[in-house]
Amino acid sequence: MKIPVFDLERYFAKYEFSTKYLLSCSDCQTMSMHELAAMASEAARPLWDGLELGYTETMGHPLLRQAIADLYPGLAADNTLIAAPEEGVFLLMNTLLKAGDHVVCISPAYQSLHEVARAIGCGVSDWVLDEQNGWAPDLADLEKLLRPETRLVVINFPHNPSGAVVSQDFLDSLYALLDARGIYLLSDEMYRFLYHDQVQPPNPACGDYHRAVTLGGLSKAFGLPGLRLGWLATQDMDLLEEMSRFKDYTTICHSAPSEILGIIALENREAILDRQTRLIRKNRRVLEAFLKEHDARIRCVLPKGGSMCFPRLTFTDSAQAFCENLVRDTGVMLVPSTMFRFGDHHVRIGIGRRDFPKVLEVFSSYLAAVV
Ligand SMILES: Cc1ncc(COP(=O)(O)O)c(C=O)c1O
Image (cartoon, rainbow, N blue to C red):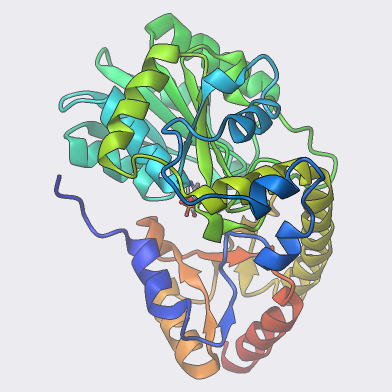
């Protein structure tokens, strides 16, 4: 398969480990392996201390699969497949899609959510979110995009990069629309568990729609991307089985230490998520004050969930050129919307890290000085 460059990932590869300040990260504050391992329960400690480094089960460690199923009411361990999150997108699309199929994906979106389908030979239509309406998707727009050969619709809420969230009513209507046409749904829920203010989290798609596949993982809300641990969850056992067979050509099975650390993270999920949520809410207040101060330069729909937002820079015709100057002059790395192939007016700001107020301050001083 030939596939175009993943713009966002290459941008991170260029700056993530070399520049001084990161202001566009999508993952929340991480922790050390020592800290995580120390959280192990009596039951999990022997799994870690006595771990042997042989191959693991293709579908994933049974205890890990059970811990994941516990996140999805109505689903059992058998309804889950362990994969690195990015690998999950690849497994699903390569299993479900063939050249000539049609796919609809929300836009803007994390590139693999549409690029893998395109590389398989599918036609892909953008379901563009409406910034004027809080980055909400419109079902009437989707209906116009659907075709007889539409096989898959792809959504991602809480949304990367805007932090938009959809309601349960919206999802119920979406399922009815797709079910009537026999269309599958990939619901990328990598940012689940992060909700702000009074937002009511909707149910996971995999429990409510029989043709839905939920993508989840520990990279974002849990702040553990180094585990490379994600999963696919679905009621469709045939699809799950087929995806596991495709995995024989990607990773075969997951990393043994990562699986056990994943079990420990999930058994401590309340404590970990509580800490992350408190940090994000604190950072969001800092963000609001910053936006007020720079009202004339930046317009932003405040995020309802997730760990980022996608403000519009009103003072320049090229967010990318501005970001290049910013990183050169201050060491602050900010991702421009060109990395999402979504115009050149927005930037992504991540609010999940402990150093966010400090890095935002550097950015704020720069803005005040140069704009
Ligand atoms: C929406 C979305 N889906 C999937 C992924 C892939 O996650 P990972 O990098 O942990 O493989 C990301 C990563 O940024 C993402 O933002």
